[in-house]
Length: 324
Image 1 (cartoon, rainbow, N blue to C red):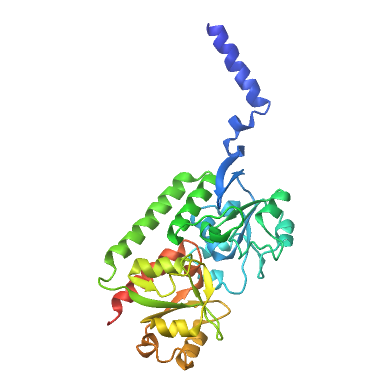
Image 2 (cartoon, one colour; image 1 turned 180 degrees about the vertical axis):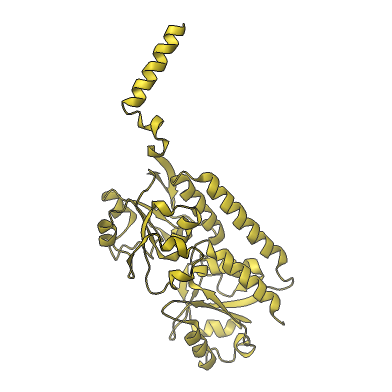
């Protein structure tokens, strides 16, 4: 019996030495994880490319800097030196200050790309998860952006989408415990703001992204709507089952917002937008403008990423400061 056990043990050692990869290196085994509504097999990435601050922040917040090759940061993003993870950005390469494209990914020899649908990934620009699949490059999409992903849509409220992404990335990179701890902390922060929200009717809020002929604003499927709702407000366009959407100025005037939230871009500063709103005949007589109830939301607090919760806490404090 002892001899049989020894023989079996020896055989196992031989198998391991001969390349039983799953046993000797568990990280080499692929794991099934959702990419929007589609189940995809992932191996642990070693040269990830992140598009925009939200993608990079998710990776850095999970302690995955050593797996990140670089990032693509178009002008809308504020300087990375302003990020809570500025030190992590400094350890990896900035690959481009333009939109994400296939050439950047190929030149970087990337094995993993993180972006949103119809932001970093785009059929029009020729960089989609399917195209990257064909090149042997893994990809991951923010669940918040999966609302209208062709073939495999997924509809999750924005904060839940953030938590889902962190847990999915945790599974892909084999850091599930780290992801669970982070999500638990973020959930606690969300619930603290929710519990402290002002009582009574929610404050009507208009988010102004950009645009003069027609304003671009937030529909139901983006983080600012959850920020506004959780803090005790109501996005006046939360009935739009879209992400970012153009509306008419007449609809803004009709909504009579008491607060205007400005999304502050790196290349479209909030000061210019505020000046426009104060002068425009469409908005200069709105309650929010007359009372100077203007809240500035940083770009990276408004796109899907851990900084959504920073924006939530700031907006929660702001609503408490209002004299209604």
